[in-house]
Image (cartoon, rainbow, N blue to C red; front, top):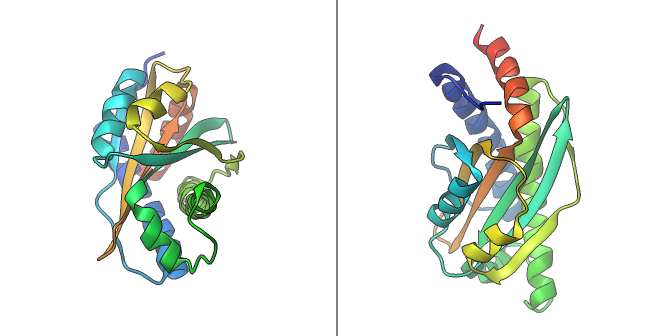
Amino acid sequence: MSVQVTEDQRDCYQEISNVAMGQAADKLARLLDVYVILPIPKINIISASDLHMALAGANTSDNVSAVCQGFIGSGIAGEALLIFNDASFTDLAKLMKYEGSLDYHGELELLMDVSSVLIGACLQGIGEQLELHFNQGHPVVLGQHCQIDDLVKAGNHQWSKTLAIEIHYEIENLNIDCDLLLLFTEDSVAKLNEQVDYLLD
């Protein structure tokens, strides 16, 4: 089954992602009392091998930590991947007024808190616009303080091509940045396109 989106559909996905990304950024900004810098989300049809390139391009820092969370609903399934620049933890701990020691567990707690805000708000924003409801699975840590290469090996991707929405979040004047990738399964794309076509009509 070939996974395709038309130019109009791509524009619509971009618009939807923009709104959802803004809602998620707003939640993050309120939580941390900061200004979040938002670029334009990237919408691509990628193969599993392209995912490696997308991830490598997404994050230039040496070490990253990542969380993956599956989601499903209304015949659509996929996974959200949040890749966090490791240099972000110190600033993040300050902003979140984290009192504990910044060891493995402390960082894990911060990572889980931020990923639940960003992934949850983003999926909710996309779902509301497309009139879909997503149930989220439990977040799973793919790795802490590792290289992008290790993450991709850890990801067990069953698909050959997928729709990917890539969103980069950065916090002004602080060393905090992360990438959120929403990857929809091949079977889900046709259903998503149908929903998008309703909006385009």
